[in-house]
Image (tube, rainbow, N blue to C red; front, side, top):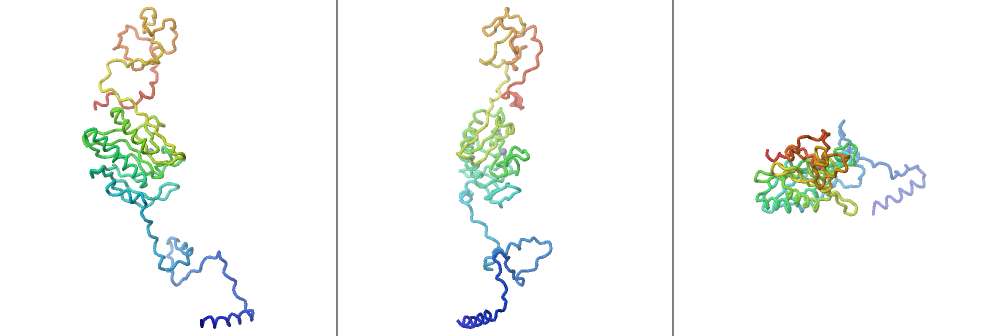
Length: 341
Ligand SMILES: [Zn+2]
């Protein structure tokens, strides 16, 4: 009250005597720092303090470093009973890489409390780690049980990785860059075997069981036959697309035969008519052979696997032709006898 009484006459005096007053401080002017409070900035120190005046009205009590954000719903749900997945700091860049709510997925904990480690541990967002944990717990552990064994570990081929799709520089950012993806080659079992997902000597029904599981649980599944970049591993991610569009591209190739093939493969129905080796159509007529068409496009070309010497010991071989390139389904690097290793 007293202050007001004193101030009013002073103001009146100043106004009436027309003493020039300083202009009002423009709103956009930087706030005045109190130099006495701020410690002198050392040379070379990060100029982070220059951002401080942006909040000049903040009371000194709140100037402490910001509290970490509260744990996300995902983080709260991904308990020790489900996974060993400690939180790690957010990854920011470079570029659009990284993300919030990151964890290091070290192991999935099965309902019976067994730990199935990821080798090596994977860096990913909490949501992806949850998807992986649920997949292992609900589908892969029972699959191992059905095989009379248990899961030993999950083979992590790649998780967070700041790169373009398929490691192509300049390509659209991979989900690996967003820490929402995991590449898997296989699952090791306690009986010493593994479910190698892209190997043809893994029983087909096991690979198909994994295919159905991952294509239900992940929005992107890329494997052999998808784009040429996934012949030796399966890519899993949880990218969200318009209309909940999902990608499930994994051709489960035929299993290699369990015994060495002694007989030639069954001739497919759609194969062109067979020509006899001697080129004398009249002699060795079969139901399929069409002697009236000696100029059929590629004699014997459709049967690359036919071992003529064994099957029908013809005295004369057809004139040597360059072996046709077999279909893709037949060109796996693994030998048909690799199961003998
Ligand atoms: Zn991948």
